[in-house]
Length: 406
Image (cartoon, rainbow, N blue to C red):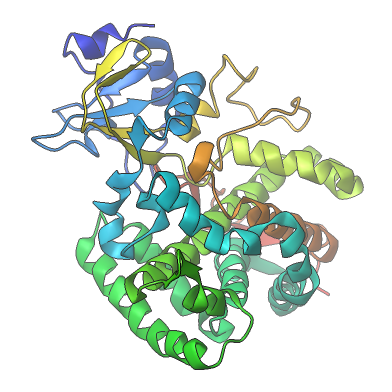
């Protein structure tokens, strides 16, 4: 399909959508129908986020095109990530391509395989969610974002990596600022420096005394006979800790919001836990916690008939692809009984999210324990209704609930 609006230099124009509180889905729906490859808009709006005076930017909105871009690593490079998020994370795997990417990914991939992660279920994941539930269960009310979702995943990833779990709240704060660094560079850089300063003595201690954790694996890993440089070690850690904490934190909030807004769905899942895997996959599709990833055109190319010149920035809207009606019937609706189909919540291609099995495991264990332990769980009628919001990162800011105290 030729995107005449882009080719004729008449960009598809968005109304401004707030990064933190915006609701982009209606505009993405209109774009999929009218202009599925959107050129950067000089008047602002969503289309201007990656554009600069010397670089045009494009947004890819439809499922087929998103899949094509993410699976074509030689044409659409990840190196652009070194330019924006890389300044806060350092040397990171997210900006690597080809054999370099495969070599570095293999260093940590074994730790995130589903079979390896099962050992963390009983030793880390279940005890962590139950520790937080122990604190709120006698009270009968809570804010599940403040008390559970913002704390549970970051504590889990800290334990797996091998950093002190008692400081997980601090890592959550640093992670938030690093992830949103392009919006507030001063805060992002300060968080990046603080995280590195905290990690330096831990890295040095693992050099002399490996402890069998992921941090020890990184310090002693070799590629082609060479140990990782300090910059690559800290780049890995600045990516793994925020990614392992922030994405699951938001999607778990989205899952709990759906259960509370749709009590009949909660009742079905609570009475039949075999429905939980389908519920989790539908949540991941319906409200992805991360809605877009970045690429850059490595050569002159085109997408859906739209010419894209070498060096152009590409925003791949995985959140939009997950709502594409050409792939999903009633795509804007949450449907527990939706026939199983792959979604883009974790991307696809060589950069598919390394932590997807961990995220699913945390969601499964966490939701099971919440349904078991918070009897008569319901929204607090005296508090505002929860809202899933945001542009690039989506989740509720608060989730006030009541339940039977025990």
